[in-house]
Amino acid sequence: MRPTLILATLLAVASPGLPLQAQEATAAENAPAASAPALPAITVTTVDLIQLSDRVIASGLVAAVEEVQVAPLVEGQPLDQLLADVGDMVVEGQVLAVLSKTTLELQKAKTARDEAQRVADRTATLRAQGTAPQAQADTATANALSANARVAVATQGLESARAQLALAQARLENVDLMLSRTEVKAPVAGRIVERNAKIGAIATAAGQPMFVITRDGALELRADVSEADILRLAPGQKVQLRAVGLGDALQGTVRLIEPSIDPVTRLGRARISLDQAGALRTGMYVEAEILAAQRDALAIPITAIGSGPDGSTVLRVADGVVERVVVTTGIRDGGLVEITSGLARGDQVVLKAGAFVRAGDRINPVAAAGTTN
Image (tube, rainbow, N blue to C red; front, side, top):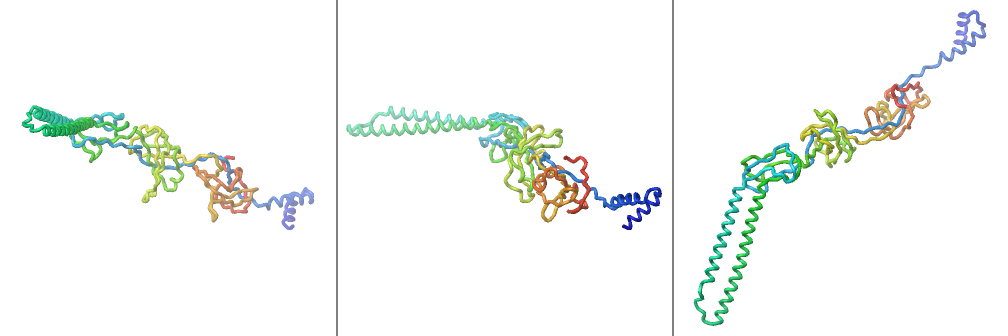
């Protein structure tokens, strides 16, 4: 009562015209207000339902989806003509190069000559056998045996002639086949990205391919992804691609996820098909933003998340009193983080987990500017 009496005395001195009873009432009203503690103003944010996007950032080099190597089908022939070059779009069956036919045509001519000579020799032999007189015929039995022997010899000669004819025809057909293969044709449609063939070089399949073709000109991005992020990817996810010199982002789709992780770099690889290759070329460096997930979820600013022995925590404010709540987080999108458990829509939490407040403190909650309510 001493402070109250002192305050009443001061009021009486300051207001000598007021009755003493009124001065004491005024002092009683002002005393509690003067002694009430001021609560700290703490910025809070409201838990709300927001559309969040989980994105994985990756980068890599552009490569062909499938490369087809073109090698000669005939060995040992010099290259006479080149009819295609790097960058050309070709169709299936288009002639890319022509090998020399001189050697094969000479071989065909020799084969035909040998066959003609064989036929001529055989004809002469048969003619001689048919006109040679029988020297002696002692008995009818001997004549019969001789005739049977001639029939057997003639039969064997006919079978031998047929076999030789078939062999000669096979040789000619083989030479004709090799002649047809002197034209090196594109096995698939696509774009030529490499040419090793040179005029005058001897064609062989043992060295480098004559041409390399990207099937249908299809390109893909082989993006390197961190070990932690690779598990969030799946075929069919949409991708935005950006490269130096390209104004607008290109669209792509995750085609497949390679099943192994590089043991040295600890990186996985995602193959991203391009909806439209545009100005991209093989070997270009491209950055990719992969949309791993997108959904409406409860979210708060990431600054509101703290850590404790039990995991991620937030400071929830209920009726001006702070309490610490354990939460489970999900995807992150910019400065927001998904809350999968621990909070409900409309809850208020301290905006900055490092604020100087503890569980059980009473505060004056102030809504953060620009927060979604």
